[in-house]
Length: 144
Image (cartoon, helix red, strand yellow):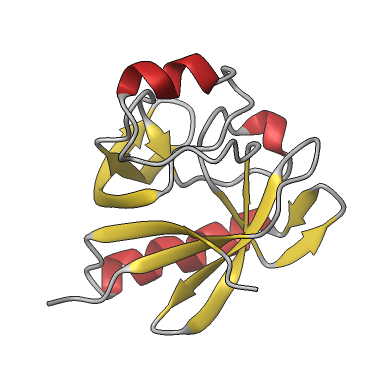
C-alpha cells in the first residue's frame, strides 16, 4: 500500500487556517486553508452545508482520494474526491485564503495570514504526489 499525504491543521484564526503538508512523517511544506469550522466527514452533508460559509470554510476533516484534474483556472492539479458539501477541491498555488474557496494552498514559508513561495511549494507537492503515486490525502488536526 502506498503512503498517503497528510495535512495537519493548526488552530484557525479570523481569516484562515495554517498547517503543514506531511509525508512519511516529514514536513513537505506549509499549508493554508479557509477557516476550520470543525467539520468532519462523519457529519451529514446537510449539517456541513448549514455550517459552511461559501469561500470561507475549510473542507471537513477526513481522508480523501486524490486524482488529477485539468482546472480551467489553475491548470493540471491534484483534486480531492468525495468531499461532502464541496466540489472541485483542488491543491493549487495561492498566497491568501480569499484565493482558495475551500481548496488547499502549499507554501514554502508561513507568512502573516498567508503562505509564501506557493508556486515552488505547489510544484514540490505536485511532483511528490505524481512520483510517489500518492492516492490519498488525510486532513487532520495538528497534535499539540
